[in-house]
Image 1 (cartoon, helix red, strand yellow):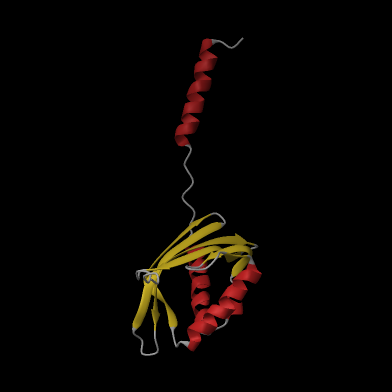
Image 2 (cartoon, one colour):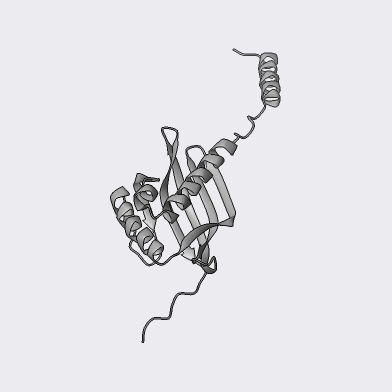
Length: 162
C-alpha cells in the first residue's frame, strides 16, 4: 500500500516535471510559404504564356477547379481541358493576368492556402477586371500541388438578358 508521504512526493515530482516542460516553438513555415508562393508565380507565368498544360500540371490529380460561370472541373484531365481553352481565349483577346499586391499564405503540416487579389489587364496595361482568389495546396513527396482553386471578380455580373 502506498503511504501518504510517498503519494505527496510523487505528486510534487509530477508537478515539478510539468512546470519545467517547455512547449515546442511553433514550426518555422517560411520555407513552405515561399514554396507555395513559387507555385502561384509559376501559375501566372504559364497562364500568361498561354500554356494551359503547364498551368494544369500545377494541380494534383484529384484537384477541383471552381471557375466562375463554369461547372467544377474535377481531376487533372478536366482541369487541363479547361485551361487549354481558357488561356487561348485570354491570349487571343490580348489580356494578361496579374497577381495583386495583396496575398496571404498559411501553412499547417502538409496543407497550405493562399488568398490573394488579381487583376486582368489589356495590351495597353489598363485594368479590365480585378478580383480575389483562394487556392488550397497539399504537399506530397515534398512538392506543393494545388488541390482546390477558385476566384471571383469584383465586377458585378452582367444583367441577365431580357
